[in-house]
Image (cartoon, rainbow, N blue to C red; front, side, top):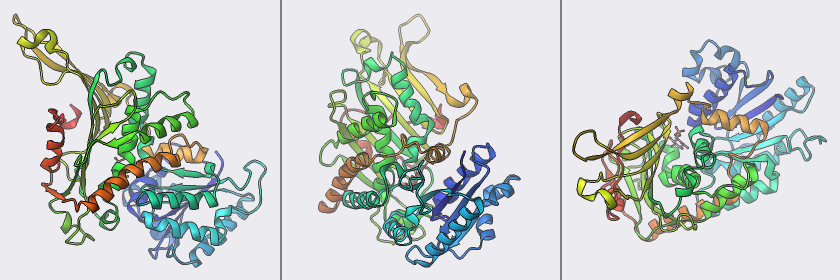
Length: 482
Ligand code: BG6
């Protein structure tokens, strides 16, 4: 692997602390990083290099941290001032000189989204966006510089379009990596293998056999110390616009023409374009009871920590099949799960013997206890005919003895190798922002009421009603992925 320099903007934030640095450290421990690499944290906090290295309390206990942390350094400064960028530029030149070459640069935007424009503008003004400034035959127009942008990519359709326009003025498309780390999850990629590598499921994967689809995205935790970030974002933008859309796309997409970046992104983009809100009132906005008392949250906050939705996917395959979504903080458990519920046929022959409420369901457990479960109906042992739903299970860890690469490890490795398959193309984002912006505008127009829900519950009762009025029910998960 070739040496690299990664500059992380927002390096003292939650994302860097909980995901990025731990993922880089794991790659280091697994010998998946090159011998020469430089990680430069860029943030407002007035840190020296050593303070930055000590900032990662959990990792610092590891005996290998010392070796890794030698690769970390820190650039303090405000994102609006030119000075720290100039210092950074000097520093990068120094590294290039010491290394005797132009080292690949990755600029990683891990700040709240309102800083993206400022940082991009400053990178242009200080010419940092141009890479090391001398052309290389191998990489064309300075393409060894890569720009990595975290979600949420903008605040709505307009800001997302503007951000994209700006990026296109500065970089080639091959240099731009729009992150949605859910695409890097093993379990999400496995859904593609499940659907397209197994001939037995595809014939029933359509509206003739599928009754509806449920997606649950639940976190036990509240917003913790991320009040400042979350207040300006909310659940719809933080999770629904990106992670949920990608989960839905993976269940509903058509088979890509080939397993390549172009065709996979094309299949995702097509299906996201076909998603629409089922009807007026098919979106529930909730907030957990204690949210207004959280750090950095104003006591009149209207920010949603829960969103419930009924969506349709207008393709030949899924026309008329409802997709029920619920995504929330302070839920009863940590759980991300997709259940494909098939049309019940038990009553055709067995009505008088008592059919279970639910017949066939395929559940993809994204996390925790990653796996897949197939529910079907079996005859209960005994002289009399009685029927019951039973489960057949596959668990990643039990089968493979590992849960695989953590999503950010996968994402980082792909950034290093320049593979954009698991990153958003701008039209995927444009379509999902269209849907989400419509919902946001409607909320504003209709002065949508926010429903308060008890912490540790599955959200406001309106979310239950959304599905129950269609004569269906949320499949309550059983603890621990049983
Ligand atoms: C992030 C959201 O994108 O995903 C967070 O901003 C959320 O609010 C996190 O907690 C969850 O990621 P994971 O990989 O732990 O499910």
